[in-house]
Length: 556
Ligand code: ADP
Image (tube, rainbow, N blue to C red; front, side, top):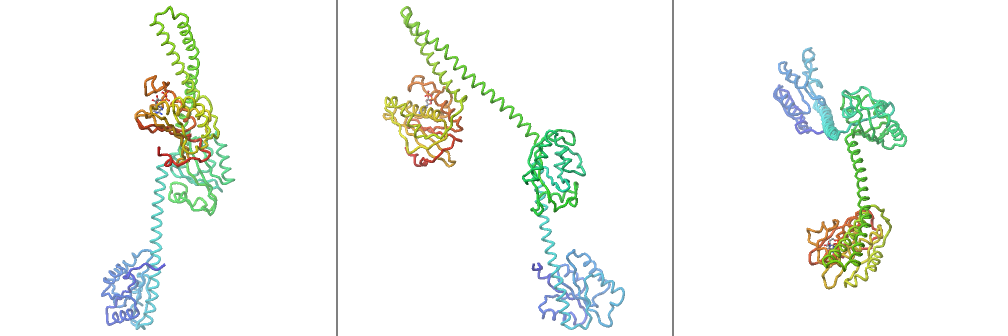
């Protein structure tokens, strides 16, 4: 790596106040392309060193006792990477460095090289160059240290983020040394296990002792399996905490074989000195690391939910049975009432006034209506009670059958049913699908005042791969505010006997059949123009793609 130094940090400072030494030295250095700077006294030298310099050449005569301590102080406060090189030019035979005080003063400056005068230029340059090399290596070390600091800082920051995330998510972290069974834990782990103070030694076996006796074998079996085949150790179990409380925990661990990438938990472990120290575990040995979480609240909610779902399913089934049994059983006496009213009208009608006879006819009509309402209810509740017979059904064949069975009535109504393109094969219940189409086609014709009543059936496969089937008519249409309510039981938008009459149960039955398949139905309509009913069977995916895209069939 190139030493990262500024221009001034590569300068050689020269302090030689007497004679021509300073000028000569500076000239020699400049001729050798070494950046340099002459200083007047020790104070100026110190200021330049503080601003950044590579080395200093100091002549003995500049080394006056009074100011030397300033330089000593400056150099003794150098950072660890720095050992500032000083080339000390002695005065030859008359040198004072032989005296004890000068010798000691020089020693306190640290990295000092003595050069005896008179000095040959070549010798000076060689000494200066070697001081420069040494200084550049120091700059290199400074760069390494700075890089290390940056890495440490980034590491500390990401550790802090990780700790924050784990604590916010209420996760406890652990690291298990498999050879010894000893385990490092985060403080959150100890809190989850109910410890007010971190236990000094925590092992796998101690953990197992806290697992509820009813779950212990299962937890240990899973642990051994994880070790044997390397699968993750994942489980939920009850624990008896250190404070005696029973709680549910979730644990997930993963075996880390030697040589596997350094993991985040070992990074966390380095910082957590309240717990087991990093040196206590063999960092290279096989380990299992993982997370733990208290899931008691979730378990309680799940239990409540399961109980409620069960209750709901039971009461739903009871309701279905009730609707089925009551509509089934009510039909019997109703038939009797209707029959007896008819007998009365036939046998005793002559003896009644016209008003009396009309009342009997109303009674018969009302019981017939009630009979068909009960029939619809029976049909509706049957959908929920019986299993669907789901198989691969060719929708082309179902439409053909339905149209065939309705042919007489369709001719009577002067209505035409056509299909646009080929329909897909769908996994569904054939009989129920026939019922859906019969109802939708019948409505398309019933609620239609056009001179030529047209019903178009088509389909497409949407982006999710779901087959959407549609039944389109040129009928009276449905106002937007009623487009949801028409699917409710016994909801009609018109007077009872208009548009061929009806119980208002047809679309409710259609919806129930489709939803029982896991599908959905909806309508798009413009009053006065017509309606399009769309349905899909959801989970019962199309078996083959045989439809045009929606754009192709969008045009009417
Ligand atoms: P019903 O036909 O017995 O009245 P449905 O449940 O089949 O009962 O339909 C509910 C109501 O939705 C109908 O009374 C009618 O007002 C409206 N409706 C259904 N299909 C159509 C349609 N294709 N065009 C216009 N209105 C419709």
